Amino acid sequence: MGPHHQTLWRAYRLSHMNLITPHPDLEAKDIEMSRPLHWLALAWRDMERCPTAGVTHGLILALVCAGLFWFARHEFWWIAAMLSACMIVAPLLAMGLYDISRRLERDEEATLADAFRVWTCGDRRIIKFGFLLALCSGAWLVCSAALVHWMLPASVHTPADFVRLVVLQSHFGLFEMWVLMSALIAAPMFASTLVTIPLLMDHPMLTLQQAVLTSWRVVSVNPFAMACWAGLLCLFTALGIGSAFLGLLAVVPMLGHASWHAYRDLVSYDPTVH
Image 1 (cartoon, one colour):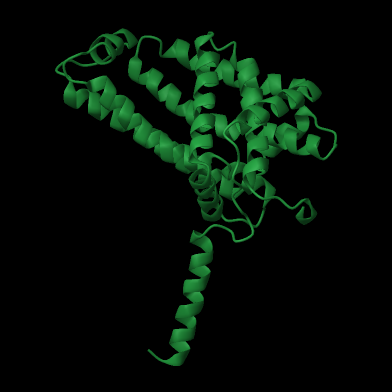
Image 2 (spheres, helix red, strand yellow; image 1 turned 45 degrees about the vertical axis):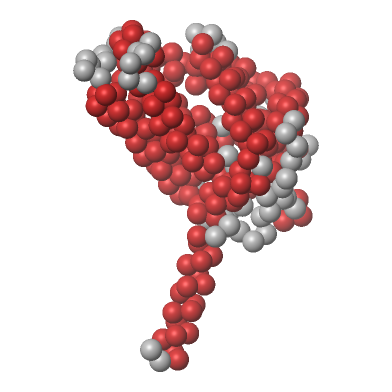
């Protein structure tokens, strides 16, 4: 290989490395275990300052979930598909709440119209990220169905079938395997989505790969605090869904605003850049 080709190859490698490594100016911060509670407190403050946007976001997700659940109430795998769809919708729906919190921290006026405007930004990075979330959620659904059908002599059709044949099954340990498999899929999804969308919104020149890897680096720096935060997210989400979806009116804005403050705490931020 001649000198000219070596120079071109070196330039290609450097440009390629810039796409697959975390951004050098974004540093993951080390936080305390109790810090997620502070994010929830800041979220309530944002909800008080701009309640209309938060309630509207919660109402949208509650109506979507209730409608899907009513449609699929007799078919377990449709309900599983609904939960999978919610995994896709929730992070993208929270974009409007992220923008509200960002405006409030700058002491700017924040309205529902501003939140809706973010959804129509047409950012290709976020569209691509939503597509990747859809693929991961679909993979979870397919793997769940394959595991259940592989290990069960009978088929699961209704939610009652799943409870009777999977949850209460004592011979095969199927439920434990199903939970473990779900956790193995959910963990990398959580690490990939933790601060990715706020990063993309806040840094227009950041690539999707850099945002995702920065999110992974945040989790690696704070594994126990992030496990605590993941537990809180699951707990409040379960409460919101378990209350006939009415709890989502408060849970969605609270977790959305808190996720923005989590991003601010977990990733170094220089306001002079923006």
